[in-house]
Length: 287
Image (cartoon, rainbow, N blue to C red; front, side, top):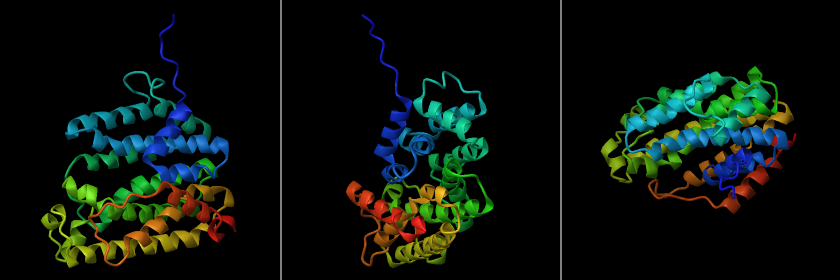
């Protein structure tokens, strides 16, 4: 009797991974054509693998080793069988089928090395650089799967990714503070006399609310710019930016008066489905 394990369906594996760990992006792929959807799921599964590294290690060095494996894989120098890793296999297929550039993927890995350490984010410019190389780059790559790249799409991806990333920083504050990790820029904290130790201790202060209000304002500006640019790009590329519907809903929820910024607010999957379906029917995505 053959006791060998059945081969892994790499496409299904990626879909399950994204559905489990990045549900809004998973839902967004449901509005894309089947061929492009498979590539999008490969890209998002890769992102999940990179982002999850910091939660899978207790020390930076093992995390650096895991990230280096992905860097080596993209450069063609991976140790071990790439085909045995379903996410790597699907990502390489997407790169081949859609001529995706490898450099932004490698840079995304490099930027996430910051996640492995407890160094504070120094300035707003540093945070924007980090988000441009991660969230914005991911949107630009997704857009390239949907349509030919252009300067207008790159411009849209930058603003959309900055809005998305800043909202994630606000939403992830309870988890990050518990790990003594700070993505709120020190520069912004200092401008509002907000003490870093108060943040790590989970103290809700007027100074912290002022910091979060400023970041929320930055996110709103980027979201408004992205929304104005969205109607100017080809309709075929817009499904790649459907997560903006969730960003808008999250920003509204996180900006509610009296909200405790340290109280986790898990999202309902049903509400996420409803939010992104409504976004898909909006003027931004249908005009």
